Length: 68
Image 1 (tube, rainbow, N blue to C red):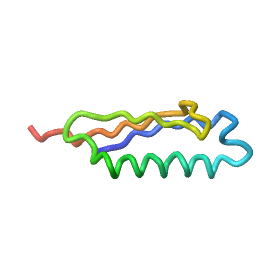
Image 2 (spheres, rainbow, N blue to C red):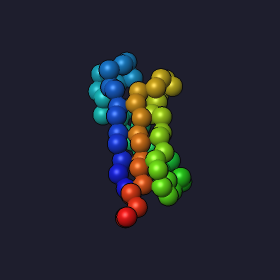
Image 3 (tube, rainbow, N blue to C red):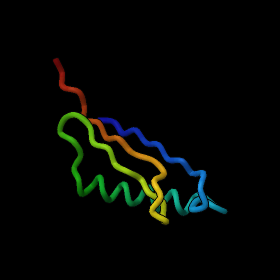
Image 4 (cartoon, rainbow, N blue to C red):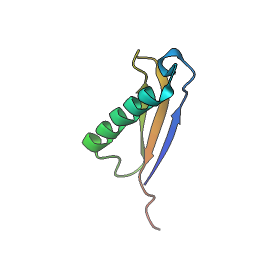
């Protein structure tokens, strides 16, 4: 499996220090991934939102390709 992650930290939720907001987003994603279990095949996309509810990115969790 692999995880592709994109976060755009260019809005007010990341100011003046982006660390706490980035940590909050990643913590929320981690909790969601633990509950979700991930895709058995194919992929699953997760929307990433800042504290204000604005879309700031996405994570795509892809299952390992089957061996042929």
